[in-house]
Length: 362
Image 1 (tube, rainbow, N blue to C red):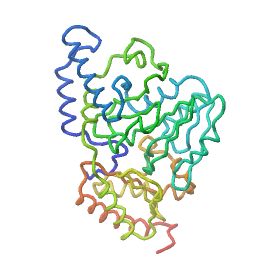
Image 2: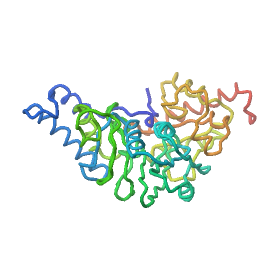
Image 3: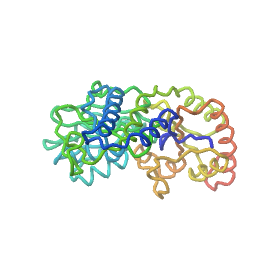
Image 4: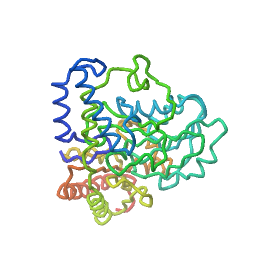
């Protein structure tokens, strides 16, 4: 299988898997226990905390370990406390659903390139606004947002697609809260973290013990956390040339193909391309049968009958959104794999367009 769906999840790196297996097999103590086995587990957790802090440019005490990006987003939104929330139309469902469940929220629009206008955020603010949540990089288009902090209002960013893939310094970004998850940068599923700026008061959403400085109750997932730390210590993947090779090849070889968010600053690994006259799901199946994994959008929306909320928020029609494909390269992809994808894609698109009742350029 040639894998080009790294925004959904990534293969675990061998050196990360080695850490996961070793800690799972050998470090069995509870990190809250004071005996030697417990303290060995505590050292694993704190080593990983330092590694994640290094990745994000913060102090280790500002890292709270979670079960993943969804929990980190929910902890940021609900933990911020009562008040008005401002977010954007292209957020991951973990943010949008949490913001709506939290209560009073305003969702601001985006441009045709999927970018948020900071002035729209400013205009949405109210005296009772408690939190602004704007994702760092979009999971479907790769568009990178400008983050603007407003005095007296907490700023959260869903950094799940950015952390471990591009340089991230939470101090320079000016965020108060920043969510990450290991499986997006070659770590395991089921473990993530939330950066909480020192001095920010955060109410827990899980109640129990005093773990994670009383911000996240529950015995720590020691092996997962250690693997998250190992993934955070990996060098950033250098994949822009592969993404560009893919895009340039598609535009040169396949007529009536359009790159969504082409005018926006984007993640180096992400390309969302619209192929006029086909159904995206049909193309996913055709490529899968040829041994290539791609997607039509967010993995959490797989099987949804509705078009991408991200693409329709950018002004695409439902039909245009449904003929869009997401290609996301990762550290284990090669030029040869990209060339194989291009050959297979060109043939598959041509075949599907011959069968399409709506493709008018034949």
